Image 1: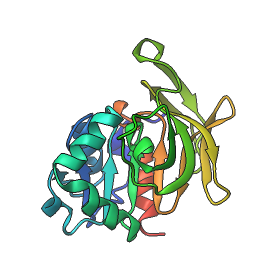
Image 2: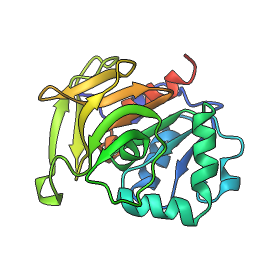
Image 3: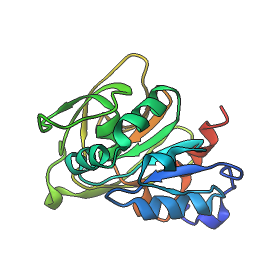
Image 4: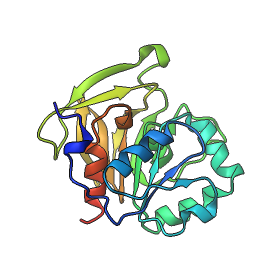
Length: 204
């Protein structure tokens, strides 16, 4: 199975893809994007959104991320940009932030309501229930090794949402409304093909 990013094309050349850097595994996303030729500045305050072609919403703790988005002043500005068409790649907690309905969320948890889908927070279990599995992904010739850690479980998707990968029949990688979201952590392997697919989608 291909894992080395050195063999990949550089679809990120000339692209500026910000990485939300309030909490979670943001720096590994930055590394993957830069290996694919993109400029990947870290996003911590509203001014960091200027000039972006897209943004990555990384994994982490979704309630903490929601709170930090609010206290940093980023939430409303970022939501406006996303609704206005800024493409996003959300992983794990990033999927939760993009979903229109989140089960088992805190009452004060906020999201961007971008993709018509229902997810259950920590639906695959707690940290001890983490697992890894090879997934068949639309657009990839060989399986992608996916790492699931406290992952959200997709319980419903809208008719306009495309499923790119499933695990045990359940969607784990979907695309809709300019966003691609994953239940798992694609950045935690050396395989950058999902980041490559996202960058290629920016030219669609």
